[in-house]
Length: 242
Image 1 (tube, rainbow, N blue to C red):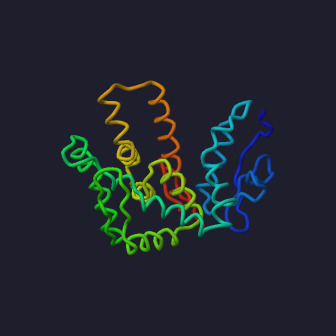
Image 2: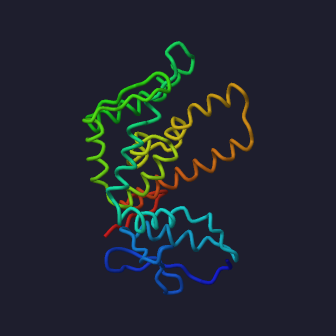
Image 3: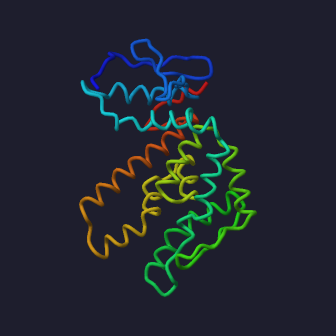
């Protein structure tokens, strides 16, 4: 598709902020009004449109896609979104370790215990640690508390968490990534620990490294999306949250 607009701006509308292309309000891909909760997020969305060249690259709209997810998918079925995210807590990657006599186990303890312990302290839960691949359920008390935490999130944060937790196969990592000051690179390294370990043992493959870089870019965009939806300041920008 060729570029069909000259200017991307934002407008204060009922319920939030909306991107305008040459004065025409944008809709989601499903046809809903694409209204977001903060001006700073709307400006970032407008930036994606402004950055396009003569030919539009459909893969260069990660924030738009997340906004559409929040509006078209999360909003009509919040309970389904929360249930899906709870599932990542039931089988959280950070809880599944190698056998204690394996070298990888010590590395997992070093990298995974700090974020897992931080989550336990923050949410007042207890995660079961499992050696091996056999599933062991988390306690109902832990899962109920996680569901409570998720249910308290707005639709835009749930959209970000859906992407973050899916990419990381970890609700703990997803929740950590939306916190102010989150070290996204460190969290991603924790999520990818086993793949990185294997690459260091057997050598890196160019295709795998490119795939990991694309996934990290999507992870980072989702973390930033959650913060922008809350009016957070990124890279020196000033928040314009109403």
